[in-house]
Image (cartoon, one colour):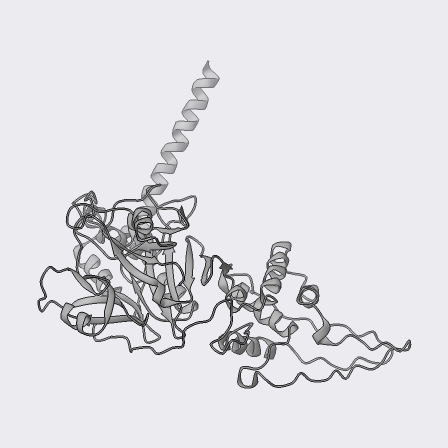
Length: 470
């Protein structure tokens, strides 16, 4: 009995000690700000809520809160996107002329830079066996994200002999390999398979682990398919739709790429101004194949509204849904015109209607405008939460992005700097944040792609859908 009491006493003392340590760390790192990053995350996350601002105001001085919010604020005023012109994208990784492209210009440029870092091969001595030059891959797998795959794709591209972007039709160089004594010629570099080439690269860098080798082989396989999107790490869904998982140290999400931007349209709840619907329902009602949540809506004090009232501009199929009458209010418009061009503009509803906008919501801030990131200082000032965004490449492809959050065993979410960085890595020239938090959802073919933070969808007002081909 005494032993049991002693064990419980030790356990209680241990728990009390851990609680005291947690309180001490909270005071030092967040209240006193010994960790500016943690203090910024705490303040921004709390101050962007409706009813939990006290988590910041109860512990941190008002002037400190004001300074943090000001330093991390995104100012997109004065930034409006140019009107893109692009050819209709072709399916299955082909360019507009119908020719297959394995990797884009950006990947080819990265390839050249990567290969420049490899020391030139020296002629082996006659009495010595030729050895492969080692490739310095120090730090290659530190980020654990898209950079790893991108580097491997570049080296695999060399093994499948990608043409230089400026001269894609140039004939392949003839092999200068000498004939072997038995009369058979040595295999040329062009004859090597991507898998064999990547094995040779890995054999020269023994610090790479088994997981990295498997990743390399997978990227090699992707590069050999002849589909540029698959070579980028996307998986093909139905015709013209691709999906990629993206992740960082504390967050996970998905990017859906739509090759034909005219398939992306706005759809709202069938009970507008009465009750919202979830994304799954709106996608099904539209006869669409996929969708993500859209703009904001008037919410309750505890995030308990039914999503029945839009929170700003809303245009569907060229018709003004909100506001009910045109006025001089200027909105942060995220619109798509009849040609499938994503238009980011500070404008009135009248401007949108008279300039061919067929789908639009309003939400702030913009993330990328004309290739320039809007998060210039700090994290963006919105705190850690689930996020949704929409973007477009210069070649027309629409990017739909969701980042899961509020799930410690899966993903805690991100701030706007991460959202912007993902869009820039995916070659977006224009991108904007949409509603997030418990509204964040992506669906495809009647199933959820991501993991909504509540474990289920909440009712919202509108969403961007991807209509079927044709």
